[in-house]
Length: 107
Image (cartoon, rainbow, N blue to C red):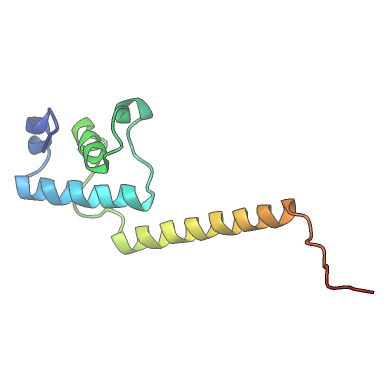
């Protein structure tokens, strides 16, 4: 791990293996479209999702353990959100586009 505050990260979990799993799962959540819990300034200088996940963990804003949102439920929520965004874009596109003239009407 290339994060400077590795000692802080290790102190937030019970083992380096759990730390790796938590960070990897969080990076996958970020890739899936979950909003980061740290401000944009803290994410400045990197687009690497693993680094962002480690920074979230270092700030203490990332929770892990039992009684959290089920991953399946989180994925379903993300998919519904994406579908709603897609439908909105399609409706917007249809509202903004002019009808295509029919050039097959030959007299």
